[in-house]
Length: 234
Ligand code: NDP
Image 1 (cartoon, rainbow, N blue to C red):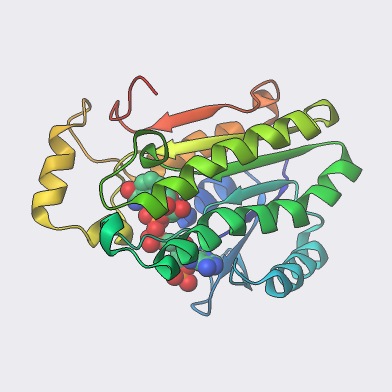
Image 2 (cartoon, helix red, strand yellow; image 1 turned 120 degrees about the horizontal axis):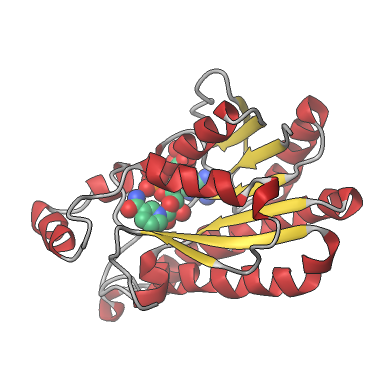
């Protein structure tokens, strides 16, 4: 059955792969962007996840276009890496505001419609770093670990209403975000990946497609790694 889907940050990278995968599965897919527009044939709505009013306006457009959001993929995220000693409070709060508070904002806006429909799927894109930590990533790791607590609390609040909230924890995926790393950092990461390769955005997208489906209705509050074994044991 085709659902109404919204993917934040679905204009590029992992979010775009998720949006394309879900569209190919027969869903009506909208994506947020911050001015770039959305690649065809996706329905684009402009919203910064740090701005509650923009989120509300985007949801209204999606509701008019394809009905209330039934599947929310909270994917938008940023990094701003540096060691704790050098990290300003602004660097910390800016990353948490986008990655964690942003997820809270969109989840809160989406849950009304899901409650009414007695069906819903939240998928939060976290990171292996949220569970393992990462040197120079105190802000990012804290924001990504926070998504686990957020999703599991949602599961307890809404689990009996046909709504699931799960977390996907990607490892090293080839996108603009990892493109910023040095060759040395990339090689060091590769050496730690049992699969012997970096991940592709489509690897993440397929996991999200499953968690968004009717078939995944009894999977709730889970953290699903998509990391080639990088984070095993967490
Ligand atoms: P990219 O940097 O390629 O894309 C980030 C996306 O998030 C863009 O669409 C960007 O929009 C959007 N975005 C950033 N900040 C905001 C904001 N304030 N409001 C709305 N949209 C925003 O990253 P990836 O595709 O690699 O990452 C996607 C998600 O996956 C992130 O949450 C990231 O933390 C997570 N992840 C990535 C991994 C990787 O190896 N790449 C590994 C683990 C997790 P715009 O185009 O406007 O900038």
